[in-house]
Image (tube, rainbow over all chains, first blue to last red; front, top):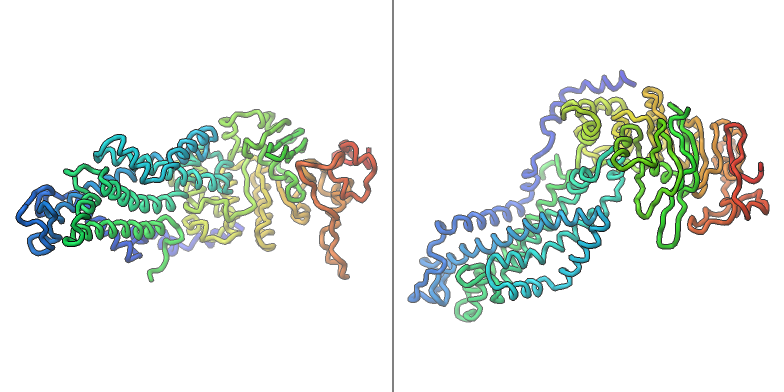
Length: 301
Length: 319
């Protein structure tokens, strides 16, 4: 038996080749999907514009040129002006800061907290009882109504928007993580790992977490899209970001009275929200493939 | 002195409908470097007996109610979780029925074995990986270095089971529990896997507990055999004694059910009836409703364990 295997061992050239491409980079898998590239570029462009807003935007977000009220999209104002003569493009670029910033903050913090809570309740029965009853309580509110109530209580400010949306999303993330954990815990490879001495921490972070990561990351991209919409919704209802801090929802909301004679006031932010949400969903689809080892080393189409 | 000596092990599951006595007073000895086969139908408590040894059953609802499991004079059932982790992998390790799901799908086979090695031995990543390749070589996986870089889904069922054996044997445990290691594989691969386990047994002096419902597998590999029926031991002894001279009617029945290729066409013998509901076992001997040699006492009282030297059977016929 041993002679045979040593003979087989001496397949050096193949080995070297395999060693070299031990693992294809995750980005290559992601970018095999053209829609994912487009979505990524769109979101990255938005992000960059938001970060560099003071330099990119042609006007200040609150600069008013009363003489140029309701200018249609054109050379001086690419996306037109609103009822106070403010440049819509500039307001939207600054608005991207609020909208994307809020969404990013909400998704990142609720991802961390929700994953931690979900893992804990998936593993420890007593903690599970407590955590799940609290999430039940928080999830009993319809998402927007819950956010509305919290905002009405705390008053409009960007910080409070983040807090309100966070409270709405954390229980949902925790629920998903808990569910996946409970399923995975019963898998044979978890038992096998325990049999080989692995402790709870090791099982959690080395076996459970990586295995729920790919559905989770997809959920986070959807959550990002959902948060953009929720933030826009809160701002549209007038209890989101305060008037001096533009956000896409706010621009949309301010324009709704003039929809008949100044269509660009509602269409432009609407399209921005639509594209951002669509990109998130498409990017999520691409990211799903990155987490799946079966996608690696596949021939390019 | 046997390496592992289990006495009166009782593992119950408290479920909504009542108490399932999955393992109800099972005793057996495992000798150094020998194979103990545990046979029985599905649900007879074979797997639970093995998992109870290292407390890997879900608790609750599971509960180890009583018994003793002495390994090197140390009672495994009284150990704390922390002490048990020293036993797992190092002293007792296990391979599973379904190699398809026994490996983490997100890591390469080599990485998984290397991880386990690093959990037990102080070696760096590279050394651990080399050891993993060594283990894969030892289980006769062709081109082991390449395979170490493969993900589980890239291996066939037989290869995965080999990889699983490599993983389980990577820390040279004293006891290897093989829970139906060949059931999910086709017959030729089955033979290879059993041969491989046997090889390790000879090479490292590992003792093996082989759980199966296949009598053929038991005859070809085990030294001793224990037959279980709904959580109880019905017969135990040396493989030749038990197979040539079965005492308990259940064992007799099981042996009659083996398909023989003696030429003529006769129907495959089957045993009448089903295994009883474990929550509501029949009174007396659990096997009495299906037994061809039932007596009135069988329905009233539990049978005593009768000894014929080292061969024992729990049956009223010999009391």
